[in-house]
Length: 217
Image 1 (tube, rainbow, N blue to C red):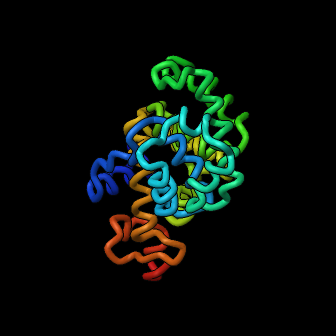
Image 2: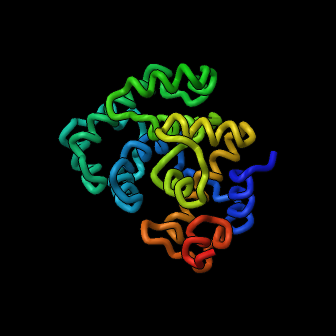
Image 3: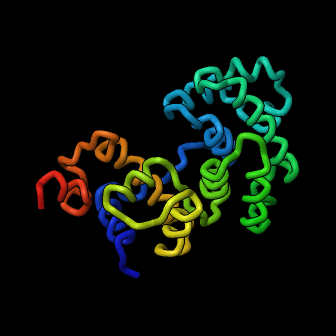
């Protein structure tokens, strides 16, 4: 299948290769990171996770006093809200005995509906958990993806569900592809496709709309 999306994927892949996201030791650490990264930089999430001192587990979070948990995750910001979110999503995971294998035996649509019913879990966080923690083929849409669509441009529609559907309909249904594509979009956005773009050296330079706009082509 050849289209604008696969052109972008292949170009980014030639530059970045397999990035092997998400940087975490366990599926539960991915869940925690997906919650903590809301409205903050990843560096702050790393500081919060480090505060667990190597004892990050669902049992630790479930058994932690709320005030103690807020202090641990303070570097990630919005710590009172996020402590509540972590307690809630950990309770969801408890329903599967804290077993990733048990989660993976369930239909992804059912799991996504369950996660969206958990306090503090929106579509982006739910899809991040399903893709990166449990390996389900569900594409994650974030601000970087939307920015890419606007600049390339890609007519993916408006709203989370429409953009997600567009990517999934125009890519092989593969968790590995979705995983690495989203990772590459994020990395390229941080290095080049910023709010104020740094087009020089961007692997997509010469392909996206910003190039033609800049050079008056």
